Amino acid sequence: MSAIIAFLIKLGFGGIVGKAIDHMERRAELQNDRERLKSETTVALAREAVNEAKIMADFNRAKLSFPWFWVFAGMFIAPLALWWCAVILDSVFMFSWNVADLPTPQMQEWAGDMIRWLFYVGSGVGALRALR
Image (cartoon, rainbow, N blue to C red):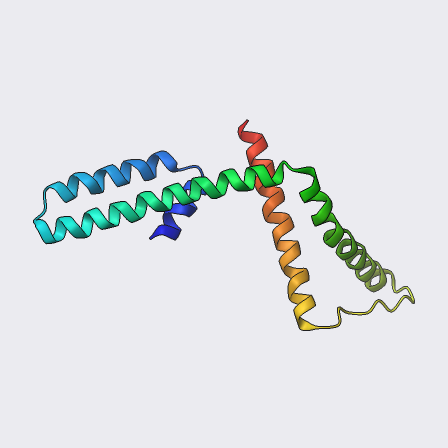
């Protein structure tokens, strides 16, 4: 449940999440002791998930605005981009480069993760700038 709440907050539905938590609190007031305790526990967990999502959003916002973060990320992404371009150019235009594949399955997985991360972060930064 906390993962769903965090996801909704990331999408900008924090107000809706707050209203849902308030509704759960009102519903808990109308229940017997055992059910009220279960509902109050669920509400407390939901509030903590909201707080955690806000803290992580602030942390990521600060991290993405720090220039050295981008320098460090670029040290990994730039060589991957060069390799990716060489593979595509070599396969499309049939050059005689014989670009090697990444040597281990772990490196292939890391490359895929970096590409996913790049598009995820780039989309997130673009969305944040659009909201301002």
